[in-house]
Image (tube, rainbow over all chains, first blue to last red; front, side, top):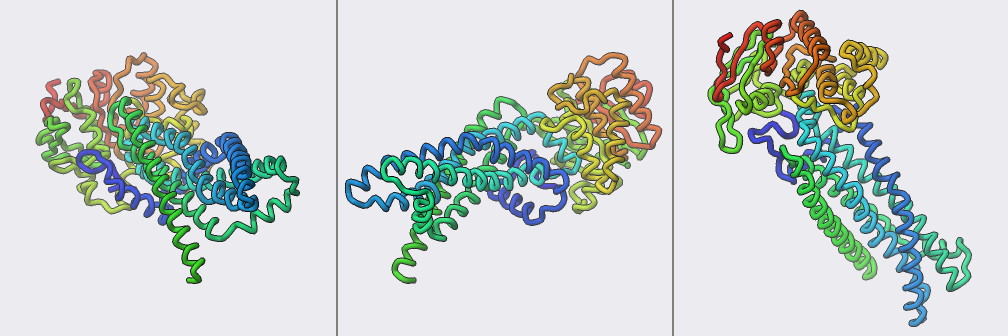
Length: 263
Length: 222
């Protein structure tokens, strides 16, 4: 029998089994690839492209704030070059992925749980099962892939505009050519920063899409369940994004700590 | 496709809705099942469609239960099944045309794209849906949405057709289109199971008429 909905009580499996089914489906992405490609493209467009303006504005402001605040503090202790380390911490390694994920949870995560919740109540999921279309292959997996790809796209906007915002404001304090500013920033950037950023974005993207889909599909027969599922989806995803960020930061300090002592 | 229900029992929220329900629908026959509101027609529809498995008893399709089918057998079964839900259950983020293409793309993927489009346009023209092909389901009236659901169910020329008939006040033109499509299914040798209280369908097309009462299926006293 296909993925779910075929047990006696029409219940979803546990979240762990649900995630395992998504991973299995992504590995053997074959049966419904022809029909789920459109869903993937729509998800990337809605999450990764339509959120461009919001993320660009946020990162410009964040880059500028970091420079303004950081410059004042660092100038007082005579360590203005540390501003690049702070920019990398804020934009690339920690705050950037975290803020992008929160924007996506608020914007696209709720959209996923609402859409799937309404589809469940409207019996559209039953119709898919009847046609032999796996809801996980058709609805969930493309959203998971779309969410991860979108986070990477948004992060690239975020970095570009954050660095540009930081450069513009830093010019108020010291006149520095862009290439020089950029070279100093790159000089402070390590491979671990990039790896941790990818780790956080990929894992957060997976959990945002999986949790929101799971909560949406958990609705049963009443439209009043949909907003309740939304609330649970937002709560669950925010906690998971925080946990992924914490694990990523711990991994970073573990790896860079070992490097520093020469292991 | 032969469908056989044997001793099917189902509870919903600790309420017994079906108990020892038995039914034999021979291949190619046209069966209507009527029943009062809340008697479990939609639940029985979901069970026969294979949306859920029965808690008790078995439902056999050409002598094989869904739970005994392997993945390819189940896909073949799904490809031969056409189901129309009470409120059509069209996929809301797709246009009517995309909804009709969905089963074709899955079960008749080998067909050339032109032929798929031809099939969609042909069934849409027959059911008066041509104007609505590019619209999303939320722009359709209930009657139009049900016709679109009917089109989606028959587009793959199913061997088993099941309809949880709509609770919609319909006009003569709508009824004529529906009756014509159902007659064609009957003539093509499709096994048809319709959950309805509509006398026009029962009297004109049904080979057998059953009634669902207090969780059991019995022959209706027509």
